[in-house]
Length: 154
Image 1 (cartoon, rainbow, N blue to C red):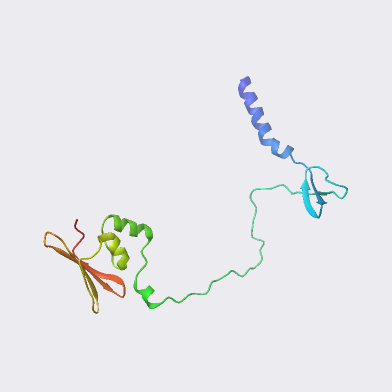
Image 2 (cartoon, rainbow, N blue to C red):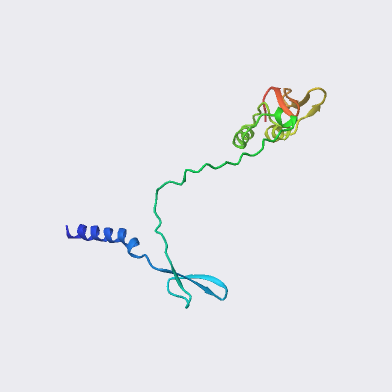
């Protein structure tokens, strides 16, 4: 019982000690620079009142403030053609050797490797020929994967 009472007393003292340790702050000009100290630092020392820091409250002062609205940038047509693929999803696809509509040629190279042949025209076709005699094809339109047939094989 006596030990728990001592612990309780120490806890109360520890919680109360920050309010007991408030000290004066003095502001002085020393060699043309403003200096703050816990003791008077010259003949011109003036005591500064420091409000205690409190937790909580309201940050909004009730004033109407205009918020910054950046101008919308117009994208070039080539950027609009390919849908956004997050970097996390791109890593997952690359590790699994998978492709997805909207991938760019560099992304397909990272996932499937260099194609065996490239055929250009209205649609660009990348062909992947495998030793077993099978083949997979990836089709690009406007710099993005539009379709494919087959899958990655080691």
